[in-house]
Length: 200
Image 1 (cartoon, one colour):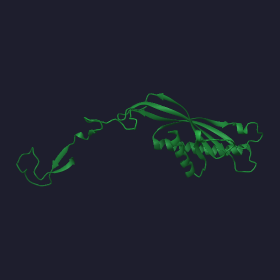
Image 2 (tube, rainbow, N blue to C red):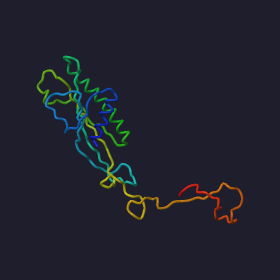
Image 3 (cartoon, rainbow, N blue to C red):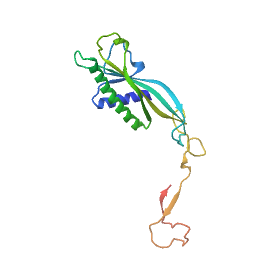
Image 4 (cartoon, rainbow, N blue to C red):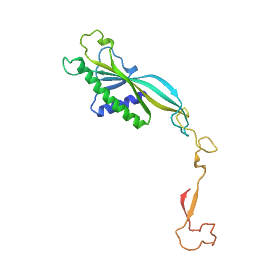
């Protein structure tokens, strides 16, 4: 799910005019300083009882997937000061926070924002003048662990055979728009002119 969230995050950032690329950790081969990149990575799962109940599919647990965004920012200004690099990174972080909330609403899953802050990386260690800023933001998405098949299908709701649904039964109501007594004057049977108004 984190990979898909990364793709949605990048699209939302782009829609706001932010050209930062969002990449998975394993696809991020960094050999030198980069800018305008956000690395998304999973940090671990925790499980607990479901916060809400459902019947089909049955919800057994809630899984909180920890994740981390690492934002690499750098001011385009020549000879920029460290606070200017940090300003760029913070602007990207703010856009990420708003985008994550949008993703949460669309996906209807839980979202908890954790701690965030600037970190040093080996590329910049020992430098008197920082050539960029790196901000790490922790967050957690919560999803349901449901009773589904390997293919992702929920269990059949009813029926005598596997895969049959509740369509085994149907109701039928016969009505007529004609005026006058029934054809056979029996109030318990519909007239011959009756039509199916609901059901099948």
